[in-house]
Length: 401
Ligand code: ADP
Image (cartoon, rainbow, N blue to C red):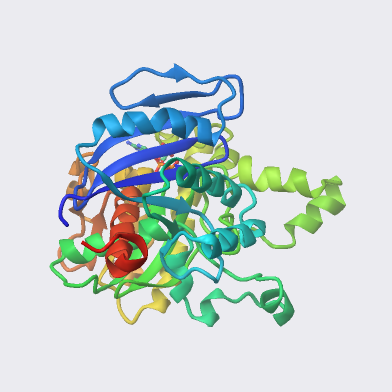
């Protein structure tokens, strides 16, 4: 049962990513992806190989081209395919073996994630058609947050909107928050995922989370991934009346406002320069006022969110930074922590700046709760959850030995 192989598939609207993972390993065995699907420029590439054009390929055609490459690089059979699925609504509180009921559930949740769930489904359907004998598992971005209590997940709106239309806070990035909280427990010598953690996943999308003994208690994202923190191009929280204000004063319609809040705001909107933190740090160092403001707002709002989430925990064992920005930007970590002294969190500046890229480490000053930088690995989490499920429900998935 050791060293089993898992194929992790992340199907997007115009791309599909594959990672072959070995049980318990932190490094992928093989990675490949196809991009610009359903266009004449569609192509696929893989680690250690060139890009190949695959004009007008859809998800299934792309998988058909990529699977033989996966086979070439695997030295054994694949035990399970693990699919990343963005929205599981209230129906899915954990990973599930994919059957007709699960497929219908993912479809039923598509109105909550209209760009993502249908794309995830095409990846699942293509993989089921091409690998019919291998069990397939869906791992949901929202499932981890289903442990949130109603006082954290309900909006102050009339009950019918929740009860009939599912309008509530769901949260996303669950796979990442779960993974780093578990790693934090291991790194601080705790057992069984115990501990009270705040985590900040800071990539192009950003979210924060309060986790108690491996369960999400509250998180910053809501009905959609727009709520909460300042992100690369997303605004995060704004006055909910902004829509009406823009409609009244500027005559903007909903698509225009959605474009503004999702694609033109955040670090990009504030800086007027870029959504990329590396570029903004460079520009700030060269005296660019917009870049400086964008980074300051990003860090202040993150600190405010973390301080708010702290009330969901009985105490704080530590704060975790992850995602491209959290793992690599010592400046973001330092500025955020400069606002969190009230919680007793204090950074050691030397440890903070000395941490090597891609390395996990602790950066707190003496006397502070732990402050950890942990590279996230959502694919590994998906692989491990898929194997765990396979072990729990073997009769439905594997022939008896
Ligand atoms: P995604 O959410 O798309 O997976 P990532 O987790 O890769 O994104 O995060 C992308 C962000 O991380 C970008 O804003 C990028 O500038 C930032 N980032 C990556 N490396 C560094 C670095 N060395 N210093 C500062 N920011 C970095």
